[in-house]
Amino acid sequence: MLRVILAATDDSEEGRAAIVAAARLAERSGAKVVVLTVAEPTDESARNGRLLAGLRESVERILRTHELAPRIEYAIELGLPGIEITRAAEARRADLIVVGRKRRTSVQRLMVGDTADSVARRSPIPCLFVSSQDCRFDRVLVGLDGTERGTSVLPRAVEFANQAGSRLRFVTVEPVMEPELGAVWDHAPRSRRLADTLEVFCNPNGGGGPVLESLPGDSGPALAIHRGRVVDEILKEIRHSQADVLAVGCHRGGPAGTLEAGSISRRLMHTCHCAVLTVPL
Image: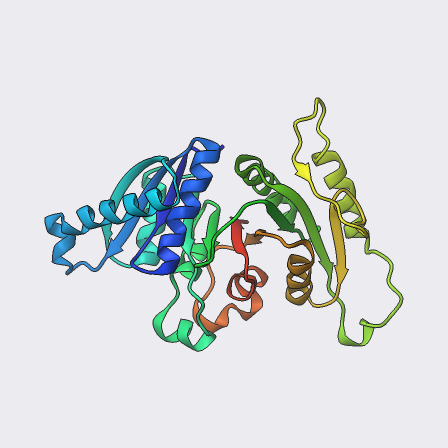
């Protein structure tokens, strides 16, 4: 249940997109939005109230433009955004963090840091990362790896889709070694188990399950099973299904910068063009 959504914003297109995305989700779910800006500790405008007044004026203008009117609370914190955003979310018992995702190269992320990456590594709650493009929630694609731990993404992703009024589908990728790419393919046992899990999860007793969107070739209840390189195949399924949001599990901790190469979720955050919902594992 979404009760409190924290939207972290700054003076950028991506920051404004985070406000719009959070407000749209709030209107669909009935949640309150906490709009947060993190300022430098030496920022005098943050101490004398000018920054807060400017934030309120800017947000009200954005909401009027998009004809949105959720319940809003405003907050200013001082420090490093990647730290203060997660700290503020915890203090306000937020259920979701929304952050604008800036497109940066791996070198830029190493040199200047990346707030989205920092928040994803620290947050104990789901985070929605949006680009400067208009964020929609019509279709949510959930990436699952078939493991017991990875399947823990499922309840949070389904809850998000229900709150957002989204149609839902799933994708799993069976990774293969380079010489196996052209070999005859039979689904791995864990993919078959995953299909069985989804069959039960998405058809609860008494109904009330998520709205699923199946496509031709699906191997289960709205489940696409791919074979190949994990990131490439998930990106392919995003294009095929025209997903608006990709939901993936995200391991907390780990190094920042260019060293995210070993993390599927963090690589997807920086490469896919739709919004990304990270669910902490």
